[in-house]
Length: 443
Image 1: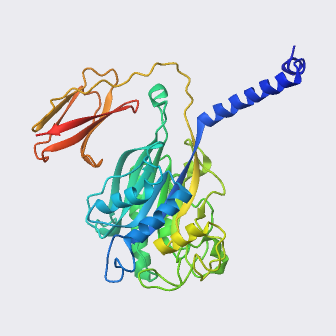
Image 2 (image 1 turned 45 degrees about the horizontal axis):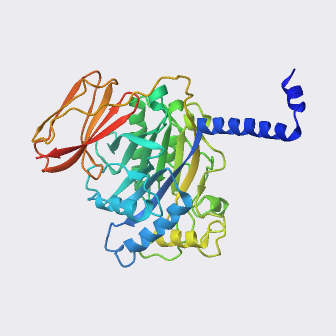
Image 3 (image 1 turned 90 degrees about the vertical axis):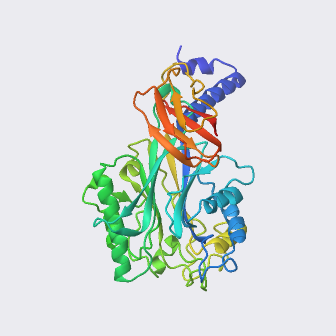
């Protein structure tokens, strides 16, 4: 008897229930194999970075925190990169995490480590720990002639936090590059932008970079003919080129033709905020061909790239006037209050590895080390059934103080004698990406 004959032999109600259960089972199976993540970039316009023209009066941190909370509630990105964060102290980055991001029931977001540099304004990455783990980070700060670029370009490597990592020992990685290129329309400014992107692409080339990459931030580009943009989208090696998901080239500056893609400025009058209304496409998320072509478990979802609050009716006008029906009034007002830029978002579909093994999960054993410890910290892994690939010492804020990568070593040693007395954390990560975290007392 065929499946169709079998189904039609059943009473209609039973047939309905069986078909519904089969359909539900299929949907659940498919849902377990894919996930959607949202990426967002945002220039926060001198967030807690006070200058002679941007002060606590005309650029209130409290007003910005409240605005960011409303915008985050509305967008809920899983990967969130920012520019123009006040530098010099990690406190600024923690304030927006505490006051805006981890609000309204959210406790699952964290941030990357400070790059340790003392620039006035810096980049930062926030991410959803339910979906991602920060594996590593670095930055690029030199032009090809070894002079400093105007503002560093940060790189963060995240891997997808799949609950079945210990079984299939495979995961999906994404490299997130963040830049705030030199502002200004002069030829000198244009050349500085070009030298920064030229150096970045050369660095990626020398590292034979492949896989899922996004390059996001405030690029301050006026048109697609700029050398900086061409460095990225027409690099000599086609496998390293970046792609604009919406494929919008042209002279974006002060052109109503591109009104739907403009990201700056949210206001018509200046002061701390740039004026002039919406007339520039400065903010971008570019991707590698792997994401465009879905060749490495991540795929750009068409028609999800957008500047939040941009309805195409903003040319030389503000984000709140004329009336903005693209977002709720609360959100458009928050966009007006927070920055002279709009955030840009896009969604990416992640394909998870298939779980074909019935291998039993093998957890990590309690770490063996002397605790409390006065200086010579020896961590013994001889009791572990999994290989340990990385060990980190962190402070209680999550900042990584020491880190070592292992091959087949059964122990690792740290000199922590210069740490102040107090509580710290030891985090060990296995080859299957399982982690164990234990408290360390330094005396």
